[in-house]
Length: 111
Length: 116
Image (cartoon, rainbow over all chains, first blue to last red; front, top):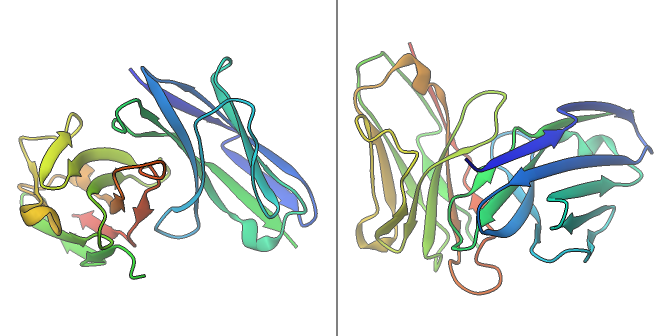
């Protein structure tokens, strides 16, 4: 059965800290790994990763995938209170189907 | 560009009643997804449509849940009869369905269902 594990499940930091969120997965016929930010209801798309070792970057957020070790990390530098959210990791199979989400990491950034 | 629209935003029903949710995806998006998100968990895919055809409904409890996407645009998800454990947020998402960005899903605001 396909599975996505995220760690830590919860994290509290202060503004300015750097955080690393982890996502490991087991999926048949892996195609892509996606990161989402969920603040209230609707997750918003952050990154899609399909190739190992290629860092994707957007402002203070960056992410990289290791297909050999079956994991990805999401880094957030110089955190701000607005980064407080649940960060979700999801994987899909080679047919763009069977999307499986992890439980999420709840990040709280204190002023 | 208008986002994914869902209605209603909130619904409270008693167990054994029926309920329906509506989703209008982003214009031009061929793929539509329905997810169930129970409090404290990640979204769980219920059904995925490509245009008006079902490509994955392996996790849809078919004895009580049904979904359709007539004409390949809007979609409805129905629960009949509802159980207490169906209390969750029901998220609809859409994606282009083709090309390099086909897997980027855009989510609607969700419908929070409470079954009492």
